[in-house]
Amino acid sequence: MKISIDEVPQSPKEIEFSESTEELNEIYRRSNHRDFSFPAYLDVKVVYYRSGQDILFYGRFRGSITGRCGRCLDGYDFRLDKEFDFVLAPEPFKSERRAEELHRDDLGLSYYSTDEINLTPLITEQVLLALPTTPLCSDDCLGLCGSCGANLNIESCGCSPSGGDPRMAIFRTLKVGR
View 1 (cartoon, one colour):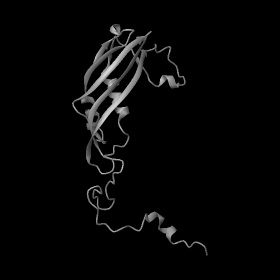
View 2: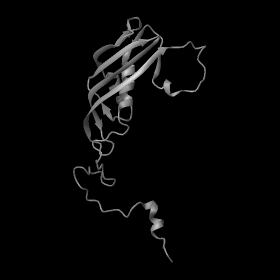
View 3: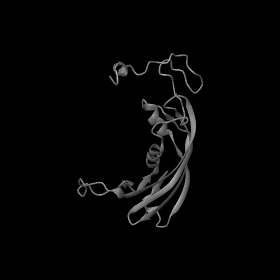
View 4: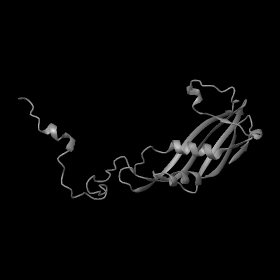
């Protein structure tokens, strides 16, 4: 979705559209971490307006995402429904830019330098920020057995209980309270 800078009103304007997730799927297809796959489109609702030269956006995206559990490696579906907001300011001239400390107010700030704003990379960034760091099918997922690889959510493994961490074996030989 593209928005012309000249058509951004000073009063809030709302738009709804379906954003393609082809770029998101390509990012995960190229990486070694294939934790997520996305539907063809995400539903996006955006309100935007101008305040001086700055353009403010806030909205929400929704969609059903498929994740791969970080413990048991099974696929599972979850609903992603997140709000976002960001500000685009005109890009300062390179001669005006110098090294300076980043302030808390600058965290949601990005720049625009063309006559048109492409929302696709901005929405993509917001989706990536909203994804869980470690995908889990459930908080109480038992994961896989470290010895035989059995999915402990489905079956109990037949492995013998280990004597503990072998790196701690030296401590088991210590005598306490002589």
